[in-house]
Image 1 (tube, helix red, strand yellow):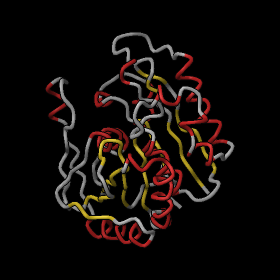
Image 2 (image 1 turned 90 degrees about the vertical axis):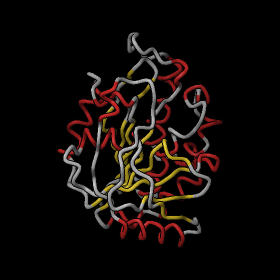
Image 3 (image 1 turned 60 degrees about the vertical axis):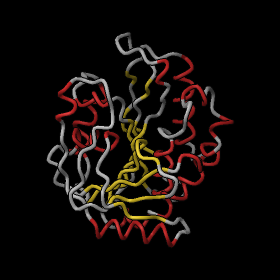
Image 4 (image 1 turned 120 degrees about the vertical axis):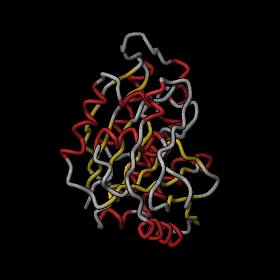
Length: 258
């Protein structure tokens, strides 16, 4: 099995920021077996229904604004894998989740930022899977469950989002001290994962402390459920990394193994 992983990708500038999360991602690819391909569920691709990238050469998308020119010069020329995209679509269709192939879309920064740090050679095929944020956590858990066979075929399923994501409270130049309302939520999620409380996680909006404040919208939390679902029932969670950037962005990363 290739264990699914969730990473927090932070700001696009993580490529250059001198922070612990960048150091972690720089060594991540060296500590894992080389995957046959990587399927990324990124917070930055939301569609009404499921879509899978199917370009043989996906473009690097600079889906942000207001950054230094060097950010728009970044490229991640990883190949795609149209045959694997068709396999992903077939698995989703079989699970009752209609999916379409997208032959035009490239890789957004939720995909290429962590991949450029962890696999800088850009020589592993990469696909992206879109989110349906309006359908919530239970749907994305099911989405991951449908993709579980890929973990037996050497495909790394990578959920890329953020453990916390209240951009209104970001301190871009301030200290990285973690406020209580961030810590309480992040620690609750970690404990729920350790204890295998999947139902509680699905209902985190009602059960977790300060859930709505940490996730005013859900798209950055939902990739966690794709990775969790792909691992199978009651997976063993390993906390790969935890840190805080810009005071309120918890940069936790998890691996889920059976």
